[in-house]
Image 1 (tube, rainbow, N blue to C red):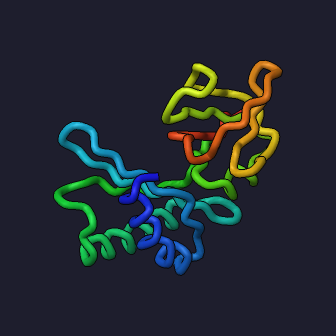
Image 2: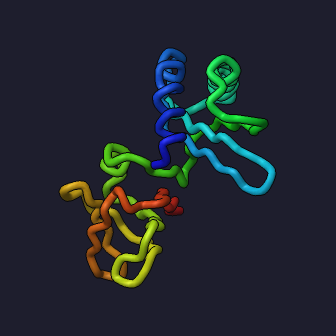
Image 3: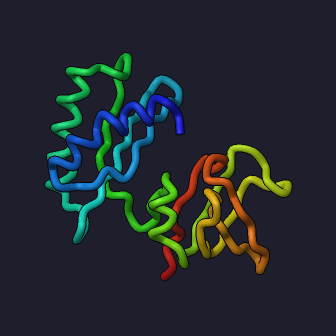
Length: 151
């Protein structure tokens, strides 16, 4: 995870926790002229629009005071959703048995993308079965991972 995102996570965690939500993750993206700061929150029983509004107001005020991002940006606060992104080993642990999609920073066994059933965590690696083959993917090399909803 980028140091900017780590800094923002540390800054936002107390605010989100005080509002009785869990800070699920932060994404900071710069594409073209625009910047987007996306904050994912979760809550027992689900996230309501009011939760997003409260967290957005508090984070916006905090950002005005701390000013960790230069220039203009769009702040988005939302639930992680059904296809929730996974950032930490603890989050991966919660979803053992689910189908996940993973994109690595660098190729592993000649590929960067994996989609399969997560069967566990082993020594800091996410264990995924893809086409009846087991892969141990180091969490540090994961660029992006998310749950694949099964309907």
